[in-house]
Image 1: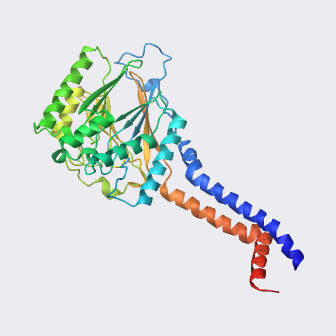
Image 2: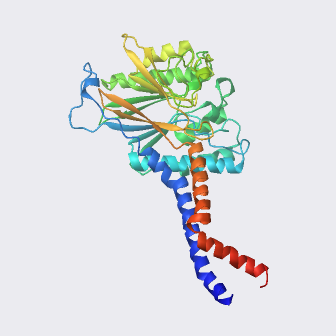
Length: 386
């Protein structure tokens, strides 16, 4: 018996080391590698000469690379009121790994966050707000040659009727986001117009009056600069649509019943009047929006009868959907194309853990049978003196 006992220890340690290595591999796969594997199925969309707008002057350099833009929506960073601490930890780790993996693989030139960066910004104190902003910059850290721009969402500052001067001022100070902002990429001659959706109710309140003034100034500046490409409109609220029934493509988790539910103006989407006003004033070439947490690709009729595409970007967080995603835009002065990129499903990660645990148990029972039974024998020997 003593001989068996002496042989037990090294074999048992070797067996336990293999089990530990397998556990580490399962953890690394589910918490790191799976993000790369899923995102490798996506790439920057390739532009086609057949899709270019021949009414617009092409780039001066025919070999100029397109501008690469990433869109992320509705991260909803939790505060102290909603959710459990583990819920916050789990969701923020998922968004951190998703963002850093995507940034590493795609290396975008510009990243836009389309509002609702926070979940409790409309309620939290100034101290908690500063803490949340610091977490945002930590989770979504970027290299110095990449630019990030953030739009206001209703969870950040409140809906139109609930916006206070204090919340508005601290959001604008934290993210340098006025009601209307123009961003021009000179090398590509591409223009973006970012709007605060809550400031376009059309009721002539102080909020809306300031937004209209800033919009007029932005459009005048674009005209005086001699810009010959139409801008891209970015908004947290989608442009007006009756429902999502006419969206051309759907995510796999979208239910058929949710497609026909009517949208409420000024709550789910911008009002019809505000949408018509923005399309008439800005005359965008395309639009990117958020807020619904779901994907939609639709179009609106422009002044010249040409369709204006709109992409509604789904939520980036597992807290809002099982299959979060982001969108990639390759764009030149007269051509563009969009990719919809999925992130790992939360259910897939749980399933991977379950499969890994099952395989580990099978290995312990059958693949590593002899060490397992030696381990059991040594345990029993210590309990039963024989």
